[in-house]
Image (cartoon, rainbow, N blue to C red; front, side, top):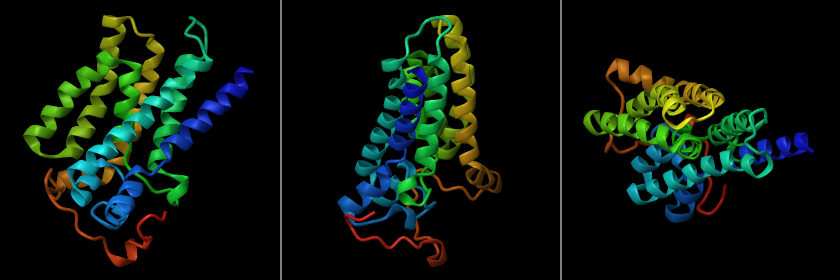
Length: 226
């Protein structure tokens, strides 16, 4: 029975993560496919540059809720006894949800970079760790105007934050696996941003997105279609 529950929550986490919020809201509200602009990603940052801050905020919140729900699901089926599966299932669901967001089955395995999803996941796993990470990420973005740099720095700090959470809040040490796995995935998804940061060509907060090259933008869906 536990194996069946495990399979169900993992599949549910991927499908939940794969909902392309930025594409749906962009097409529905403005008739714009965010994949045709800027980085071509579907997350909140490219939505901000393409669709404006109101839609971007909605994308961020909904994507965060996807992550939060994905790591909350296991608590319905697994109890937090010392030797149970819960920390491991949470880690796997967190990864599969993030993979669903980054490589959505509904939009030809395209997607975002996993930041908002990771924020939602971290908030459920450790509110204390979430707060520490926020206190590192927000000032980085505010002072540098680079969302990507803040995302990378915040992700790299997450394992440190959860290590502190183990000692301060008594969090199960096995949740550190969640921190390392999701942080690695988010940083990997920002590898092109890291190259641009090093080259001094990265887009700053507030920069508008430009249309991508025609050969790289085959997405011609009309409003209301995916």
